[in-house]
Length: 190
Image (cartoon, rainbow, N blue to C red; front, side):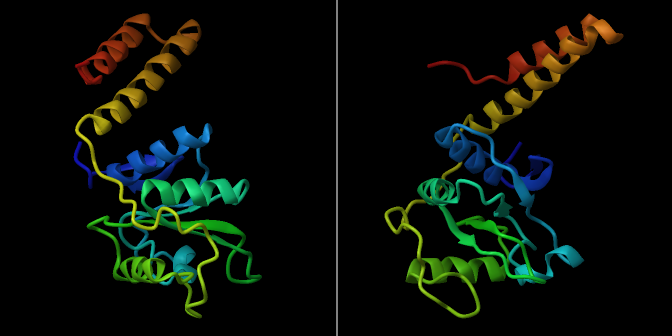
C-alpha cells in the first residue's frame, strides 16, 4: 500500500495517508472517529455544499460530538479542522477537516489550507478561526510501517471475525490463514 492508494475508514473512502492520520488522532482521543463524508467524491450531488473540498484526497466530515477535543486533536495531527454549526437546508452540524499537504487534495481544499494558515474559518465569509491555533504548523508525515500496521489491523479484524463466526460454519483453516497474513504484515521490531 502506498500513501495515496484508496481504502476506507468508518466505511467512507479515504486514502491510506488520511486513514493513518485519522487513526493517529483517534488513538490520542481514545475512541474511533465517525465519518459522515469521506474523500474523492467529485461530482456527487450529496457534496455540493462542500464547494468541491471533498473532490480530492484528505477531506473528511466527522460527527460533531466532543467537537472541541476532536478539532484540537485533528489540528495536532496536521488537519485544518473546524467545527461547523448546522445551517438548515445546507448541512447539519459536523466537523470539517482537511489533511494539510495531501497531494491529491482538491483546489478548494488547498484554498482552505491557506485560509486556515491566515487564521480564517475556511468559509466563503472569510471569518475568523475560532479554534485552537497552537498546532497550525503541524503536518502529518507518512512513516514507514504506518501503512503496514493499518493493513495488519484490518487483517487481524478479519481473522477475529472469522474465528468468532467459526462456530457458525466458517472453517478454522480460514482463520489460521488470515492470522498468518496479519502476522506477515506486522512491522519488524527494532
